Length: 57
Picture 1 (tube, rainbow, N blue to C red):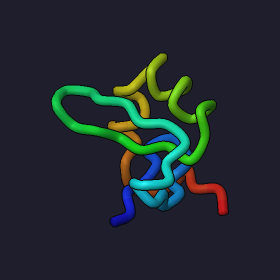
Picture 2: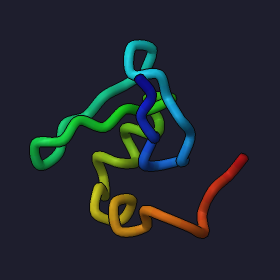
Picture 3: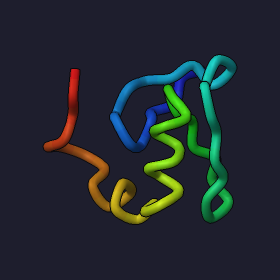
């Protein structure tokens, strides 16, 4: 099962995620601890920006 890292937009294997964070009853998975730290600081910023525009591939 793969989940999308809300910070960088990468797909992360849930079982291999470097970090997870629960917010408003939903668990988010991160490719790196730095992504989790950024999300913790300002979760709404990343959830609002869900969709297009800020992907780095």
